[in-house]
Image (cartoon, rainbow, N blue to C red; front, side, top):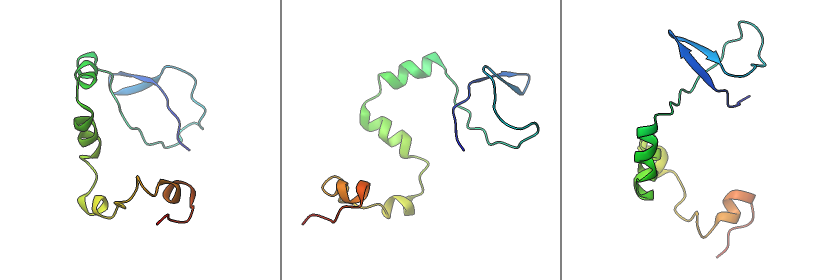
Length: 86
């Protein structure tokens, strides 16, 4: 299960800002996303192609090469399983 949970770091311990609905001592994985105002402003002024490149930078090249190249023309097929159009 995945959900968004805001927290504050206090000496290396993440303190949730709202109630957490998990069992005591349950192991979880954290994806830490900081909210740096200067970075947010820089991203706001970034061209869309740079944003896309930044989002894709950690995707392995072999995985990118395996993606379909006709995604725009065949979106109904890839999203909804419709037969491919010719």
